Image (cartoon, rainbow, N blue to C red; front, top):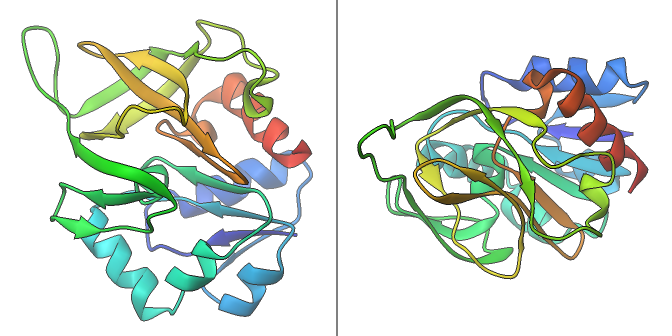
Length: 196
């Protein structure tokens, strides 16, 4: 069973629907025991980092998520929450991956938020989450903040420069885009997560 953490975001139903279409049994929940015992955990997120961390704290989920040993996938804001802190609301996050999430920089031809379809380029070829993804597959992005660079970055997109789009460390993965809204490319990535 896959536990989809109820972070209060707007994309929760689309995440559970996308996983169900792939034949996965999933449950939207904020029950710490159910999350801790799940085969896999998805941490989705749409909205602000400070509010999402407040919701996780109120549900007594921070230590639970930090202690998970099964595969975990953070989506969009859920990926950003995996890091130590965020400039958005100047909030401490889960601290599973080191570094601080910072605001994207706008410039000529570079809008913030980064919204719409963008290509993904692999940084490493042997990343299991990207096993069924080809360079230049497109994914749907909606975000105003970016993860820090580091050895955890496994894939990039180009938005006024290289922006981390896929991260992994240990049993934890994160994607800055929305696989549940990314049609066939997103379905292939979610299938790879189910096979980890």
